[in-house]
Length: 263
Image 1 (cartoon, rainbow, N blue to C red):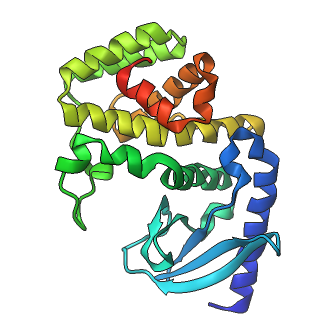
Image 2 (cartoon, rainbow, N blue to C red):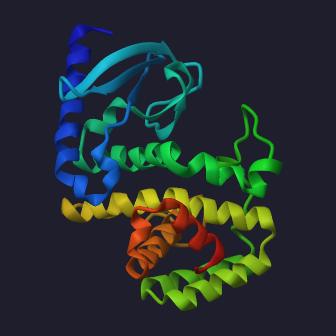
């Protein structure tokens, strides 16, 4: 890594700091700053953390990639080489446009979730206790949800239709039908993705609205996939927050409403 490369990322990270100051009203999570790890094609990870005294990010470590990261990575997870702290993990081209920069804030949502409520909520899920997690399989990414099942497709179609007009009671009725049709693991997987990724997309789109950028709605059309739960989750969360505004701050209450389809 050259000093010029380091300076280049510091400038780009400063732009993130300035953008975060502009959009911090989107959620209280942006009162804090989160570590950012940048994957380099030479299989190094540059770890930056926020220095309050300098009011900006500083390089705090350079580590070899032992996780099989790749150019284009957009993620957030506890980084083993940084004391298992939740970090935004991206490759350098994420800073090339403001639309991509907003994805950094999407990943910051996951850092916030990890730091505040994720571990407690996960511990109470049957899927967390029974699904096999190995170096090659993580249920959050690879769970075999029946996206192509014709009954599931029909219910998701109905769900998206009711979410589009914010009919929360009807939405909960359809979700209860899904709950009866799916097994426990499948239902928990759906709700978990809706809560975790849906909330991140909800916040991401709030920011994009503020910045007059095109919103993200991937997953809203057939064939359905894991991305579909980003979309149903974001729309559901918006409906819930309209009726229960405290849920924008109380992620545990939000999760339980989503799981139980009401208070």
